[in-house]
Length: 130
Image 1 (cartoon, one colour):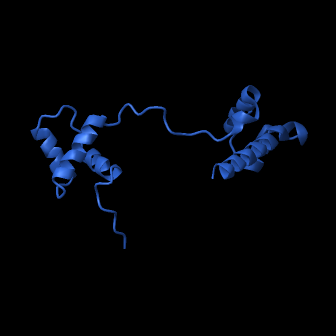
Image 2 (image 1 turned 90 degrees about the horizontal axis):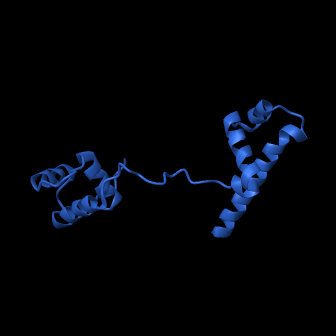
Image 3 (image 1 turned 135 degrees about the vertical axis):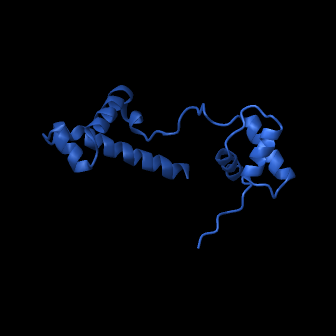
């Protein structure tokens, strides 16, 4: 699988090199090159800067995931939510939220957040569509 990913990244890098060299090679404006390839001029210049500073390695796809999530619920609270759910499997997000309030837990998340924690941790049944 890694080989396939490496090949696709290499192909993407080659595509970007072709796009970045097109203005000089084909005597086109940057705007025309961007129009032909369906990208913005801003994106063109971002990739051009990466190519100039990092070479072809800078053209590889990058993760868009944030480096941190400061607003994410603390791990201790998530664990407590899961612990309560495991002890009371019939309780939903609202009842677990109320239990956290009753226990005077600091930083009680919203009911929707409790629901998201339960879903993320695999404590809710799959959605039935139909």
